Length: 78
Image (cartoon, rainbow, N blue to C red):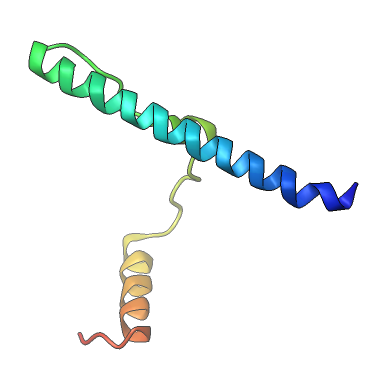
């Protein structure tokens, strides 16, 4: 049973990537058509429905400090 788990996880990951790819392609086509024709289109991606991002709880100062720390770790200047 445990030996099948990596195979199942890989299959799920590939299926999810395919669904995201297809839905993003269709979204782009319909968005371009809607803009050309003056219509409305869906502004949210499929991935945002399936795997929504958690709400941001950090303050703006915390976000800025986090970015400064990341830049300092990779060797960037001020």
